[in-house]
Length: 91
Image 1 (cartoon, rainbow, N blue to C red):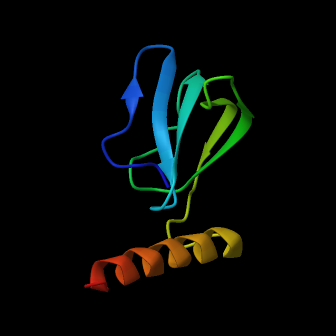
Image 2 (cartoon, one colour; image 1 turned 135 degrees about the vertical axis):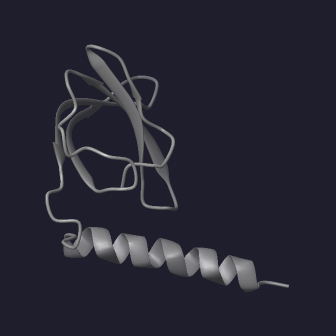
């Protein structure tokens, strides 16, 4: 998911953070982000990690249907939410 408040665009580039609510990765993209690309929504990015640990995307695709999520992504999101809930209950 694209982290809320993380998107920075200029005329040629985009920067944003993807998260599973447990971990985050900074993404750099040279090019116009898709029209459907939005904070708080799913995204698919292809590319590589650079020496600074940032993901340099060669392609960014926005999800069309906000109700669909690949099973692996849903499982990761559910696990992260469960960890957060468990941590908030600890005395």
